[in-house]
Image 1 (cartoon, rainbow, N blue to C red):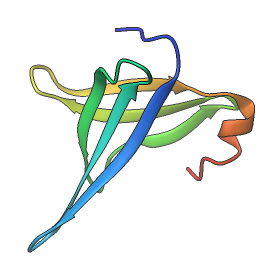
Image 2: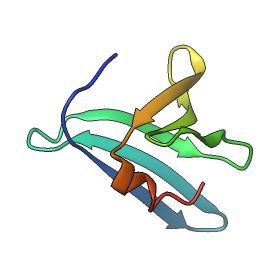
Image 3: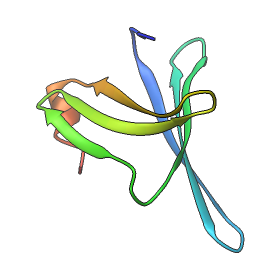
Image 4: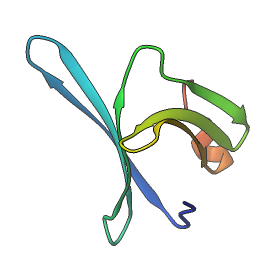
Length: 81
């Protein structure tokens, strides 16, 4: 799936007996969810170029998938991966 336009990325955390985190990406304007995944300790998060980040995410049907997220160069300066 290819999504164009601006995305809003939110990291949700919930603390009960253990801390559970989730990553949600929505298309700005329509708020359509394009990615909703749990965050886990061995999750792949790496900068693949000056303008992109590669992450792994769990798909309900197909298991673990790799996503490439493109950002502007100015936004990539704020990424601490």
